[in-house]
Length: 485
Image (cartoon, rainbow, N blue to C red; front, side):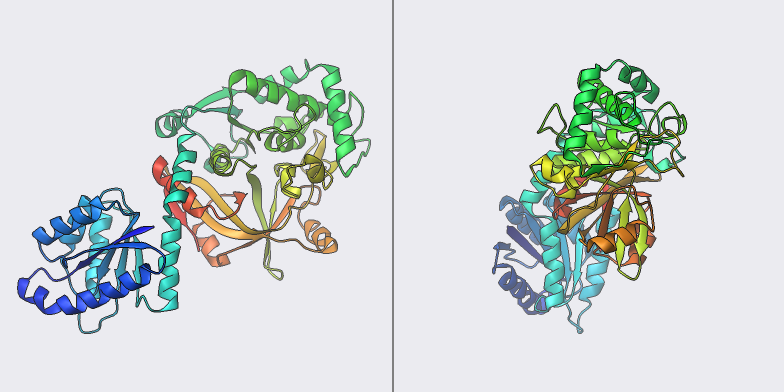
């Protein structure tokens, strides 16, 4: 990366001259640190008046830096900070406040932070001696979040949303305001058209699916699943059975989305589909839509589908999918096993079977999957749920788009998927809803931080560290990124 460094000092000529030696000492420390890995463009003059602010800002800007560091070790006038920031547009800014007890450098740091916030200028903050490991770690975290390659990936993923069509198949169920969509807001904010259809319309289309396509789907599931646990009541075999209803519904949704150019969608599932005994739950349909294969396409692109028509969840998943090309997780933030320090991320059918092994060979993924009878407690409509345990992953990026006072916000943090002995998986899964898929996760943040900041019942994830790209995507889309750690 190319790092620009600008150091500020007192706006009185006499004081500026007296403090120049100290300012240059701290700037040289920063230059020495950053030159270990990066190209550095440092200010030739310490900024203390308009002439030095203008000349150094122009020189730094013409070097096209990836990040600019504003360096504070003595008092400086915050209006100069704001003016230099204005002359170096659209470059990530990092404010570093050094420790110098004899001069009020931290006062300048906080005064400048306040000035930039007044202007709505994004920036990062680090306090302390750059020679200390913790300060270096804070700086490296900021640089990672603003890596130009990652930012390009994020901006590209965000731009892909423009012109897409979202299928809203009924509306958010169960009163979840965090899942609602304002069609005009989505079009004006993201360029995404919201196309509405009732899910019972899809059910009418399902009745017209050719029997041979349904039979092919049943045979494919029976061949590749670990086991289908027929119970003769909720989950029944045959072309007229409950699993066949789910296969019909999946094919109808797949055909309809292709015909109407739907790029991603949300399906209510609740309450009519799950309560009417002649219909069926949506678990198998949602799992197949989000997955990378079916009997008609051994390799297919995931079609993001959010259950409970959680539209902001679907938007989060589609953005994540654009970054990786892989399925994105949809789950309830269901339970925290305190003894094991594990979060159980569960939802009825919503985990794409790809998460079972994350293999390009769908056979390996589906070999881990059981189709179990739908929960009698929740679902009267019958059908099956696709159950498995997510494969381990050392680094996972979690996120969720919500609205705060009608403004879009995305919470982002990292963690891991944990693989447990099978007996432990079974024991923990039976404490929640056993027949649903489970991802056991650890988060890279304390429970208290999650409690204070996270504001949705659903959570989404992709494999790898994509925090920087998601932050850039959010900034591109006008979403406030909130990185939790």
